[in-house]
Image (cartoon, rainbow, N blue to C red):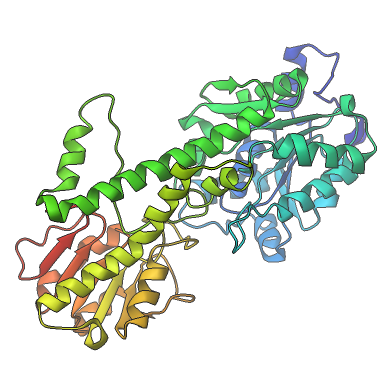
Length: 451
């Protein structure tokens, strides 16, 4: 019996229990499109659950690594072992051609990047390409799952019509559901397996039902079914927008600290003891491939004014310049100028322990310092080099060999706890994460939001 003669889930006459058993026994082949930082963990969890998964990725090095049982995603606890085990068991394999993966799959899961362009427009080109490949292999009874974050309305207005037109199937012959990933780097397996409830919403009731069934086996947490695919898309975007706006509020409050002569960090922590208050932490900027992008999934998608979202983006985008200005002010008080100074930037990635630099605040901070004439050096234990940053990268163990006039903590990697601050001559330090206690040193410290 070929794969195409196996049981399907969408519009199946089998009982729910029979469908569940078919999925768990591997009779329902799964294709996961995109084997990146989020896609590979998802594919591995699917593989450990159902035992019949092929991952598609256009990077031949990624495909070769997976087929060897190797894991190219770093700093993801447990993923190395899970990939090795599932590949060895024949539960997981990889191909370069999305069309090849689609040919034999019954469940198609898209989890590819959806960035923004230089003009802040959502860039769905990769996702659209994947949908074209899925459409080429789509057959009656298949389910297409969108785990990517997209502007609300994308599946209804763009992806579903594309799948119908290019597959030559009628609307009732296949299912489509949005099940947005709710996963963070460094804890992907934990998140996928059930750290949070899973959200599913289909283009029809049957799509939602099948998605509930499938994800109910992947997660130990509850599965929340929302009314439709657009609601599911909105849930993920709203989560990111909430954080962006909240961080902007914290950053605005941080700028009050100097005039008010208070510690805004302490005020925020105390305010948050009240159950109706949950103010986030201020910092030198907002980075990563999620939070800085999601507001534009609303701003650019709808013909409306969104002054709050736009202002929040402006506030958060202003923080790198604010951080550099504080460096300049402190140096001036020491009768030094930025143009004659050697400045150490600590942390280039956007988050501690995560090898990701998209929209990282350190990039504009390094560029601004360099433009002002500073000699900029950087240390980051996660990144192998400082490509794309206006800085000379130094290993942590070499920092003591250099004299610096200033230091900026942008990302508080755990490894920075071992820095011997007493070994440096007195300098100015801007702590962007409220994580340094240098009161015992002669360094002049400014904490964003501090007193």
